[in-house]
Length: 529
Image (cartoon, rainbow, N blue to C red; front, top):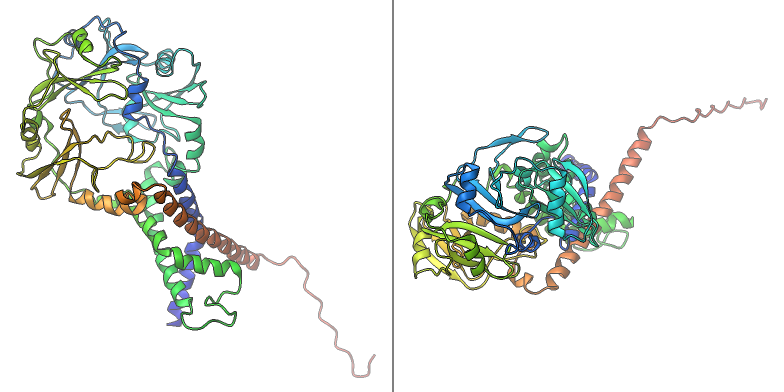
């Protein structure tokens, strides 16, 4: 028993030497992430920075442009915007894009296969050079903001997102604006795909970049990044559990030790580590465990559910109507500040979405340019075809709930469009799938199933405390998370000090002595001579 207890103490001690610095870093960077997130370009930001579309030169109708580009259809997506070098272009994605290989490391990526076609000449964009990237940056920032092209990057500290894979290499352009913004321009479409202000870049080195262990991304460790995060988390969980056991064993619940306290440690650092560990062990375990769950380790949250059958819902892929409404008519029917037209096929209808900053999407008939209105039950019947399973029920949410809610744009799950009201289509399949559909546009907003709802609790709730009663009562959410984080920092930093002291002591004992051995004293003869 004594031998087992000694090994328990030693295991916790040396795991602490290894991991307490990581714990302190995770607690501090987690607080930073509450207010500054990893750089992203949200849909709202993208639309806001596009130049107005009404003032553009659109000489070609979409069918003409597609014919000149050799894209008869069908399509997955078709957009018209001044999105590339400030010029009006059609961005067409074929319905079945093929995978392609790209990048310095020749990593296989699934390209969307977007083809960029000039709306004036029908010319297809064949490449994006520095001048093109600077023109895109000028359109984004305005003509009065100077811009400097800093070359191309395949991946850097602020572009690790896999959503950018189809756009690499990225042109990096620095703006001379008050925010010190750096723009990343797609190497395939010329679109601005990410912006990172000076504040975001600086704070991210103390926030998301270090919190997610991104120093191990984009280098020789890249292939092992997920394993590094997973195993550090598992070791952290083990250390927390062992520390809790040791702490409880050493705490005197009845009476005190000779030092007059319930902790046996005479030094303040050990005593405070003991007390902080007992007070904050539960939240430390919760955050380390939920951080591991965010990685979907070994794909435990993959349900194997069948993919959504979008073409079944919409009645096939996108095809332009034979007698399509002219672009000029669509722009006249759109809001004054329209920035983008997006052709879609939704529930059997050919539609055009007109998007403007800060305005609700206007839905137009692609053939007549008139406002489109859904017939009662039409959209619900179409959504029921998304899965080959019966529909259990369809709910209309008028308010956010546990599984459909919004967060601030800078947060990891923030920035996505989460309109209200929303349709929740509940299927009676083996995975208990829920699909959320925008009742205004008919767009599928997202899907969740029983596995992902468990992930939402084990990650979103336990890690970010995405609990609506708390999120709706800020700054209470901030106060609670900061207070718990500071407690975790105290526990971790005292552990760091104790660990380094232990390492220094070990090093001193292992270092060979450089002092000469002391001479033995000569025995004194009995006669005193």
